[in-house]
Length: 155
Image (cartoon, rainbow, N blue to C red; front, side, top):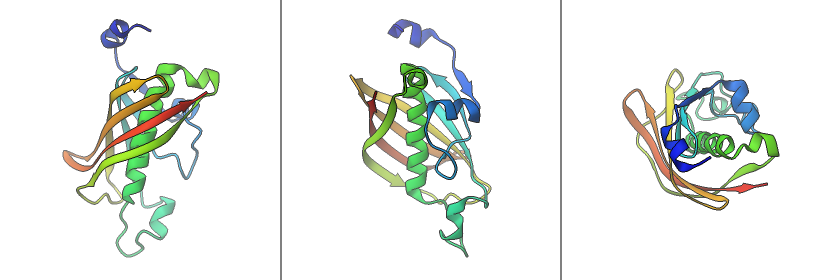
């Protein structure tokens, strides 16, 4: 698809079954519930509804449950993985997206049961099979986490 077509296209929304077609992750490691505003080759917003039933809350922390920051970054990475998978049609050719690096990770606020995470990812650059993204996670209008991360596509 040409860059001009990607820029002029409408955004796509994906439900959990469509996400599962793009990613190999399954419970308890599938960290996103839906995708909104996916623009192929560019960006998307992942949505994660955080509930007390999450497996990690049994130990993090039983008396003050908070979502581990590394799992918030993982959710951003999965959102970016969907952008790459849909753009490159990896669900049809069996490719996978792997984390390569994470930089500039900042945890700003706690994420607790009942929160809804909005995971905004935007492609910074793509060269061959390596893509770099900038990500920000929000609860309501508050920035809770930010990171720059790189992923490699393996066919």
